[in-house]
Image (cartoon, rainbow, N blue to C red; front, side, top):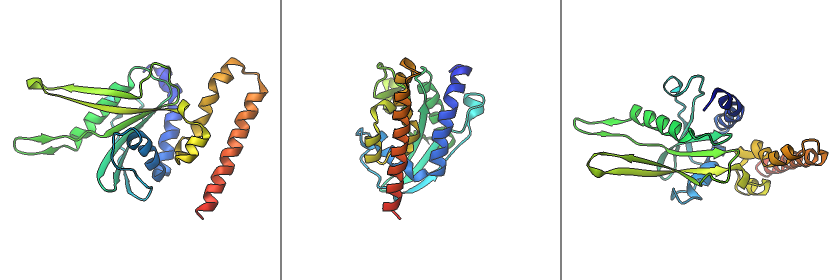
Length: 220
């Protein structure tokens, strides 16, 4: 990723990570969307599971000025660890950066024996705030080992353009509400002086505020 692309992505990536750090329980429903709804996990979280944040700074080994990645360990029926990324626009490097980070954390937490080492790769997922039509629903990692062996696994992709406000509220994906304006970006670029679009966005955020207040009242 170029320095300019890093700068453009940074505010949204930082916001995504800040929300998870301050409201980690909201991430459980995002994890459901990444892994349970895609069939990559057989356990659906209900929001009461134990959560441990495992931020680990590996920026010096990956990219200068890179913020800590989000790693979350969830203890429910099983004990699983997740690595979640938010990317403004696909740039061709996200998969490489994710496998580097996942490999380094796996090695750092490896279990060593006299003649064996066990490394556990995180369950990883990436959210694209913008997504061209050629972006698939999964990214694939294939590790080719000696003796003809190989390991292949999928990294699920969520695309913000697929989530209306109704869907976000229904699935309790409150963590994605700050990014819903990306769904209006094309309209703004085509007709930036059209006040009707700004009125739609204003009404949208008024609706979000109302729905959140209602949800808060229901749980008070």
